[in-house]
Structures are given as structure tokens and as C-alpha cells.
Length: 256
Image (cartoon, rainbow, N blue to C red; front, side, top):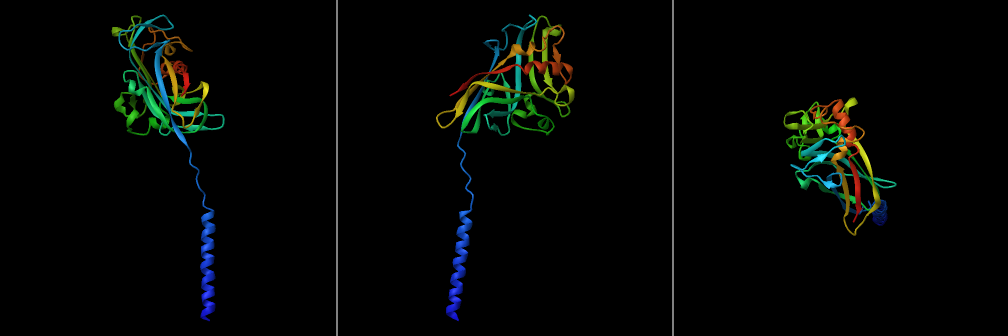
């Protein structure tokens, strides 16, 4: 009987080991996704010239002269697009400030290897994060780009002066915001690359994006500083202004 018992015990152990091996063989191994960084660089321009803050005079489409003292805006929810997939940046909120050039470039990390032909982003802050309570980093209200919990973020802020503006000292204050209803100013744009980029192990790719201040006043709405020079709340004027800055960006370079 002891001999039979030993045989049964041995067979049971072998069955358990065999079952364990089969289970181990079925374990799914997640493939490693190889990635690299892509650097986004924004160049705030006036036509073909770098935007200078302070005493540099410019002309808008209406032939009004103006100077710039403040220029900053949000870009968010950045995506790189290929022919068959999309890479979305995690927690994608960036405040670009012309008076702080450290904000005009940043890395998109962990971009999967592959070919990409365009970039998509939103000008402004999406509706969810307009009502998400106190936030930090680029979305911290300390950045002076926030109105209130009902009106939300200022998506783009332009301040300056013009002799054609009837405000005291010719002051222009155009703050565009509003994230709901007919006066929603959020604009999502897709910009094609001059040639596709290939993300791989060789080097970091660079994407240069030009933001042309002149586009703020040009199309589809020609801005006359004598009649439109102050925007401090969501509404028709903020929406009109946003329709213009939707055309402000284009990609001038993409590659290593």
C-alpha cells in the first residue's frame, strides 16, 4: 500500500508542476515601447521679426500703430499625429510668456518611435480644467491668467498701447476667455509639418512653431483700435478676437 501511495503522490506532484509550467508559458509579456523626446519651440513674431516688448512700434492690418507690453497664451492637449496613430502628451498645459523665454520651449517626453506628420493642440484651457478648483504649475491662478471660477481662464492676453486707441495713455487690454456656449473661445488647430519627422534613437526632433502677433488683428476680423481696445470678460468681442488667433500659428521647421 505504501508503494501505491508513493506512486500516487509522485504523479500528483508531477501534475502540479506540469500545470504550473503551462500556466507560466501562457504569461503575456508586454512588449517594450521604445521612445524619445520631441522638443517644441515657439517663436513669437510680428510678421517676420521677433516680437520685441516695450518701445518697438508695429502696424496692424487697419494701419494702426501699436507697441506690446504683455503677450502670453495657453496651449494644451498637444498631440502628434501619424498616418495610423496619435500620441497625446500627458497633462498637457503650457503657459507661453514672451517676457519669460524659458516658457517658449519644452520637451514632449516618451514619444513612441515612428513617423509623425502634424501636430494638434488647443489654444486655451479645456472646459474641465476651467472648473477643477485651485491648480498648480501653468494653471496656478498666480500666473495672472484667471478671472474667476465662473468665467475661467484667460486663454490669450495681449496688452500694449496705440495712439489710435481712445483709452487713457492709449492702453490696449485684450484678454480673451470663455469656455461655454456661443462665446466659447477655445480653438483647436492642426498644423502640418513641412516634411514628416521620424522619432527614433538617433537624436531629439525639434518642432518650430511661429506665432504671428499680426494675425491677432487681421483675419477674419480686421481690428480697429479706435473701436476695439478692451476685452475683460467672455462675450462677442472675446469670441471675435479668438477667431483671429486661431490663425496665428504655423510650423516653420520639423526635424532633427
